[in-house]
Image (tube, rainbow, N blue to C red; front, side, top):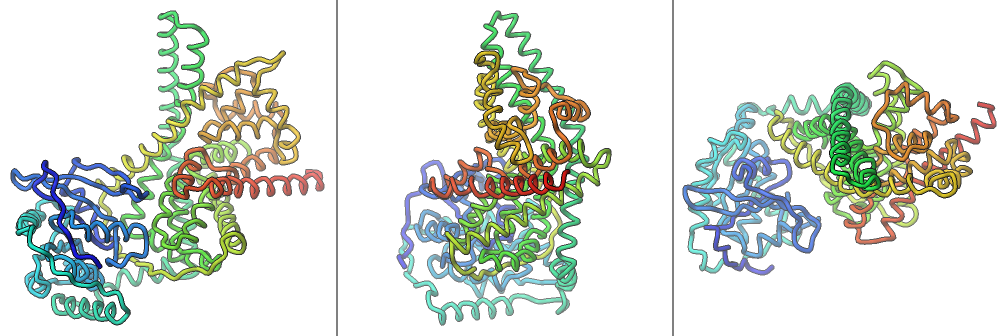
Length: 622
């Protein structure tokens, strides 16, 4: 292993501080508390791993803070851990702040000892001291500092006033003579050395930690026996999914309608303004009926549900329940020769498949990571929920948000089942291999940080996903308007394309208009139903919105019945990913072949199911 070599600090900073730590130790909370709004996120040069960078001040001195990906040691098993190891060994940091969880010190000390083997410019930040106190765990920071030979500071990162001693320690350690050579000490690269490191961490933790009761984690163990046991673990997961969907449906209906009405009124005002400016009719149509109307549909349909769903999802992460979901689903994924971490990326796909694909970076094995990427779109994202809900409320369940949530859950479970089936199929064919073992950490249950949940869910997820969808939807709206306003004989291009797709659509239990709407809805799934209405009504623009009863009547007049709605719902769950997701898949895999396979897999599944169901229903005379 190369010794640490010092790099020059940027002139605008007094020093560069690296923030390292295991996953789930509150490292992001420390980073946010130190930097406030002075931060940004970007991919590591030459990599696809996102790294947060910010700045903070100690008196009049300004420091750069680099939040490294979570790692358990400096012996990397994933791309994220490799990034953390390489940066620490590069010597670009004047000091390393090792964030540890005061409630489980022993495991965290392994990384601290690894850090101390390559540099003595380390500050140990012992986070979650309030939680340790609540559990009756005492940590003697002075004794721990003496045993490690570096400063140890106890903090509760969510309370900024506790960070003052940490800032003092950072300033002291980073100001040491930086030109002094760092002794070269090899890392524990053999099994014997690694075992010795674990024993050393155990001894230090035992010497510095005291417990008011030997059964300090009793509450967590009791909860885990229920939440991770069978059958209650699966029952609670399903019930929780129904509750989240019910809350999202119930809460998003009114805001979505208000937002839609407001945006379309703004569109009317913009159209009137363009008329006043004597703008050509074709330009008004392209800008308002095309670009703006599609954007209004996407924003009004996506924003309210995401603003509810993503905070709820982040809440589950914050209290520590998401790792329990991964634990419960590890067994079925293992039977499919895949990794249990795929459960987490699949859950992320419910919010946005593109985000789920990006989340697959947490999987160490390249084969298992590819399995998770290729099958993530089998679970419907937030953009497909409105189609499913519209079909459920118009043809199957009326006037009951709970009934709609239960039926929607059934469709989602179908997508999950298809995920297992596709994963097993890929593992037996093009991606053969055995499931790798991994250590799944079940962090302690924690009190949620509501402020952080809102910031992370709104800024990092809701607005980020909405921005990407809008960027794709705007040009798609222009193309859609052009196709709807280009007449050939007595029909426009959309109607001609729908007629060409009619035989295949009928075979799948739908029609050519429905199939064409899915194709044209590729940039944004939210526009599928409006596109159907536009073609059925021979309009040159998307509808400004209509009630469920009005939409149902239009569909019935164009040959729909409950079987058509069922086929459309099934194909909504299983068809090609949206353009944003496919671009993300290509970025992650850097392969056209895998991107095309990711598009073909759910489409073949969905098309096959629809055709089989239509043939069965036809044979039965239904």
